[in-house]
Image (cartoon, rainbow over all chains, first blue to last red):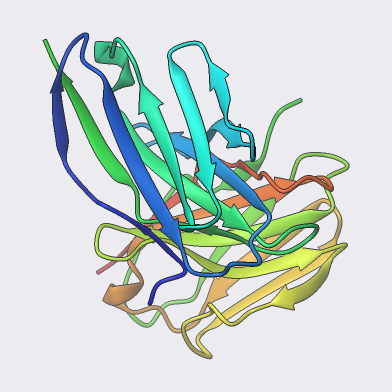
Length: 110
Length: 112
Protein backbone atom coordinates (compact mmCIF):
# COMPACT_ATOMS: atom_id res chain seq x y z
CA UNK A 1 0.00 0.00 0.00
CA UNK A 2 1.29 3.45 -0.86
CA UNK A 3 2.05 5.76 2.03
CA UNK A 4 -0.16 8.50 0.62
CA UNK A 5 -2.89 7.95 -1.95
CA UNK A 6 -5.05 10.30 -3.97
CA UNK A 7 -7.59 9.94 -6.73
CA UNK A 8 -5.70 11.27 -9.76
CA UNK A 9 -8.86 12.59 -11.39
CA UNK A 10 -9.24 14.52 -13.56
CA UNK A 11 -12.03 16.41 -11.91
CA UNK A 12 -13.79 18.68 -14.41
CA UNK A 13 -16.02 21.06 -12.49
CA UNK A 14 -18.11 24.02 -13.67
CA UNK A 15 -17.15 27.43 -12.43
CA UNK A 16 -18.90 28.31 -9.18
CA UNK A 17 -19.35 24.72 -8.07
CA UNK A 18 -18.03 23.13 -4.93
CA UNK A 19 -15.47 20.36 -5.24
CA UNK A 20 -13.84 18.12 -2.66
CA UNK A 21 -10.83 15.81 -2.72
CA UNK A 22 -9.70 13.19 -0.27
CA UNK A 23 -6.27 11.85 0.47
CA UNK A 24 -5.58 8.73 2.52
CA UNK A 25 -2.40 7.93 4.43
CA UNK A 26 -1.19 4.60 5.72
CA UNK A 27 0.91 5.49 8.76
CA UNK A 28 -1.27 6.16 11.77
CA UNK A 29 1.67 7.90 13.48
CA UNK A 30 1.61 10.73 10.93
CA UNK A 31 1.58 14.11 12.62
CA UNK A 32 1.47 16.86 10.03
CA UNK A 33 -0.61 17.21 6.91
CA UNK A 34 -0.61 19.66 4.05
CA UNK A 35 -2.19 20.52 0.76
CA UNK A 36 0.03 21.83 -2.01
CA UNK A 37 -1.00 23.28 -5.32
CA UNK A 38 0.97 22.69 -8.50
CA UNK A 39 0.34 24.59 -11.70
CA UNK A 40 1.34 23.11 -15.03
CA UNK A 41 5.13 23.01 -15.43
CA UNK A 42 5.64 24.76 -12.09
CA UNK A 43 6.81 23.70 -8.67
CA UNK A 44 4.43 22.64 -5.89
CA UNK A 45 3.48 25.48 -3.57
CA UNK A 46 2.03 25.19 -0.11
CA UNK A 47 -1.70 25.91 -0.17
CA UNK A 48 -2.52 25.21 3.45
CA UNK A 49 -1.71 23.12 6.46
CA UNK A 50 -4.34 20.77 7.83
CA UNK A 51 -5.05 21.01 11.53
CA UNK A 52 -6.83 18.48 13.71
CA UNK A 53 -9.74 20.82 14.28
CA UNK A 54 -10.06 21.63 10.61
CA UNK A 55 -9.19 24.97 9.12
CA UNK A 56 -10.47 27.39 6.57
CA UNK A 57 -8.77 29.91 4.33
CA UNK A 58 -11.26 31.86 2.26
CA UNK A 59 -12.94 29.46 -0.14
CA UNK A 60 -10.73 26.56 0.95
CA UNK A 61 -11.45 24.23 3.85
CA UNK A 62 -9.15 21.44 4.98
CA UNK A 63 -10.10 18.68 7.37
CA UNK A 64 -8.38 15.75 9.03
CA UNK A 65 -10.00 12.47 9.98
CA UNK A 66 -7.50 10.54 12.08
CA UNK A 67 -9.80 7.61 12.72
CA UNK A 68 -10.14 6.89 9.02
CA UNK A 69 -6.69 8.25 8.15
CA UNK A 70 -7.61 10.75 5.51
CA UNK A 71 -7.48 14.45 4.88
CA UNK A 72 -9.80 16.42 2.67
CA UNK A 73 -9.82 19.68 0.77
CA UNK A 74 -13.02 21.50 -0.09
CA UNK A 75 -13.10 24.35 -2.58
CA UNK A 76 -16.24 26.48 -2.64
CA UNK A 77 -17.34 28.82 -5.42
CA UNK A 78 -14.60 27.49 -7.67
CA UNK A 79 -12.79 29.89 -9.98
CA UNK A 80 -11.08 29.29 -13.30
CA UNK A 81 -7.83 30.11 -11.53
CA UNK A 82 -8.31 27.11 -9.23
CA UNK A 83 -7.43 24.80 -12.13
CA UNK A 84 -4.29 22.98 -11.02
CA UNK A 85 -3.06 19.74 -9.53
CA UNK A 86 -3.57 19.43 -5.78
CA UNK A 87 -1.07 17.34 -3.87
CA UNK A 88 -1.46 16.17 -0.32
CA UNK A 89 1.61 15.70 1.85
CA UNK A 90 2.13 13.87 5.11
CA UNK A 91 4.90 14.04 7.68
CA UNK A 92 5.62 11.93 10.74
CA UNK A 93 6.64 15.03 12.63
CA UNK A 94 9.74 16.95 13.48
CA UNK A 95 12.52 16.49 10.96
CA UNK A 96 10.97 13.48 9.27
CA UNK A 97 10.49 13.24 5.54
CA UNK A 98 7.55 14.80 3.73
CA UNK A 99 5.71 12.24 1.57
CA UNK A 100 3.41 13.31 -1.24
CA UNK A 101 0.47 11.77 -2.98
CA UNK A 102 0.47 11.64 -6.76
CA UNK A 103 -1.93 14.57 -6.96
CA UNK A 104 -5.48 15.23 -8.11
CA UNK A 105 -5.91 17.20 -11.28
CA UNK A 106 -8.70 19.78 -11.22
CA UNK A 107 -10.02 21.69 -14.21
CA UNK A 108 -12.63 24.41 -13.72
CA UNK A 109 -14.83 24.77 -16.77
CA UNK A 110 -16.27 28.17 -17.75
CA UNK B 1 14.42 35.88 0.07
CA UNK B 2 15.32 34.40 -3.30
CA UNK B 3 13.77 31.04 -2.50
CA UNK B 4 15.24 27.67 -3.39
CA UNK B 5 17.43 28.00 -6.45
CA UNK B 6 18.05 25.09 -8.80
CA UNK B 7 20.28 24.85 -11.81
CA UNK B 8 20.14 24.15 -14.61
CA UNK B 9 16.45 24.67 -15.35
CA UNK B 10 16.63 22.38 -18.35
CA UNK B 11 19.12 19.69 -19.24
CA UNK B 12 19.24 17.51 -22.32
CA UNK B 13 21.93 14.89 -22.36
CA UNK B 14 22.81 11.70 -24.14
CA UNK B 15 22.45 8.31 -22.54
CA UNK B 16 25.58 7.35 -20.65
CA UNK B 17 26.62 10.88 -19.82
CA UNK B 18 27.02 12.20 -16.30
CA UNK B 19 24.43 14.71 -15.13
CA UNK B 20 24.80 17.01 -12.13
CA UNK B 21 21.87 18.94 -10.73
CA UNK B 22 22.45 21.73 -8.25
CA UNK B 23 20.43 23.25 -5.46
CA UNK B 24 20.84 26.23 -3.18
CA UNK B 25 18.35 26.03 -0.31
CA UNK B 26 16.74 29.01 1.38
CA UNK B 27 19.30 30.61 3.67
CA UNK B 28 19.04 29.28 7.22
CA UNK B 29 16.96 26.23 6.32
CA UNK B 30 18.30 23.06 7.89
CA UNK B 31 16.57 20.32 5.87
CA UNK B 32 16.90 19.68 2.16
CA UNK B 33 14.99 17.26 -0.04
CA UNK B 34 15.48 15.93 -3.54
CA UNK B 35 12.32 14.77 -5.32
CA UNK B 36 11.71 13.36 -8.78
CA UNK B 37 8.39 13.87 -10.56
CA UNK B 38 7.03 11.87 -13.48
CA UNK B 39 3.53 11.43 -14.85
CA UNK B 40 3.54 7.76 -13.95
CA UNK B 41 4.96 7.87 -10.42
CA UNK B 42 4.16 11.38 -9.22
CA UNK B 43 6.45 13.15 -6.78
CA UNK B 44 8.93 10.68 -5.30
CA UNK B 45 11.34 11.49 -2.49
CA UNK B 46 14.86 10.46 -3.47
CA UNK B 47 16.86 11.60 -0.45
CA UNK B 48 16.75 14.14 2.32
CA UNK B 49 19.33 15.81 4.52
CA UNK B 50 19.08 17.33 7.99
CA UNK B 51 21.90 19.70 8.93
CA UNK B 52 23.85 18.54 5.86
CA UNK B 53 23.69 14.88 6.90
CA UNK B 54 21.84 12.37 4.68
CA UNK B 55 19.00 10.89 6.73
CA UNK B 56 17.07 8.72 4.32
CA UNK B 57 18.26 7.74 0.86
CA UNK B 58 15.92 4.80 0.44
CA UNK B 59 14.28 6.51 -2.47
CA UNK B 60 17.43 6.71 -4.55
CA UNK B 61 16.63 4.34 -7.42
CA UNK B 62 20.03 2.74 -7.81
CA UNK B 63 23.75 3.23 -7.49
CA UNK B 64 23.83 5.46 -10.52
CA UNK B 65 22.32 8.17 -8.33
CA UNK B 66 24.28 10.00 -5.65
CA UNK B 67 23.67 13.17 -3.64
CA UNK B 68 25.90 15.36 -1.56
CA UNK B 69 25.48 18.34 0.68
CA UNK B 70 28.96 19.69 1.43
CA UNK B 71 27.61 22.70 3.30
CA UNK B 72 24.37 24.30 4.39
CA UNK B 73 23.99 26.33 1.22
CA UNK B 74 24.61 23.81 -1.53
CA UNK B 75 23.62 20.33 -2.64
CA UNK B 76 24.11 18.25 -5.75
CA UNK B 77 22.34 15.28 -7.25
CA UNK B 78 24.43 13.31 -9.70
CA UNK B 79 23.39 10.64 -12.15
CA UNK B 80 26.17 8.59 -13.71
CA UNK B 81 25.62 7.10 -16.20
CA UNK B 82 22.30 8.59 -17.19
CA UNK B 83 19.57 6.53 -18.89
CA UNK B 84 16.43 7.56 -20.80
CA UNK B 85 14.24 6.37 -17.90
CA UNK B 86 15.84 9.03 -15.71
CA UNK B 87 14.00 11.69 -17.72
CA UNK B 88 11.85 13.60 -15.24
CA UNK B 89 11.56 16.86 -13.39
CA UNK B 90 13.85 16.95 -10.37
CA UNK B 91 12.86 19.23 -7.52
CA UNK B 92 14.85 20.41 -4.57
CA UNK B 93 13.02 21.64 -1.48
CA UNK B 94 14.11 23.03 1.88
CA UNK B 95 12.60 23.80 5.26
CA UNK B 96 13.49 25.17 8.69
CA UNK B 97 12.26 23.18 11.67
CA UNK B 98 8.70 23.13 10.40
CA UNK B 99 7.19 20.21 8.55
CA UNK B 100 6.23 22.00 5.33
CA UNK B 101 8.85 22.36 2.60
CA UNK B 102 9.44 25.04 -0.03
CA UNK B 103 10.33 23.99 -3.54
CA UNK B 104 12.69 25.25 -6.18
CA UNK B 105 11.52 25.64 -9.76
CA UNK B 106 12.90 22.25 -10.73
CA UNK B 107 15.27 20.89 -13.34
CA UNK B 108 13.65 19.27 -16.36
CA UNK B 109 15.98 16.47 -17.40
CA UNK B 110 15.73 14.74 -20.74
CA UNK B 111 18.04 11.83 -21.49
CA UNK B 112 18.08 10.82 -25.15
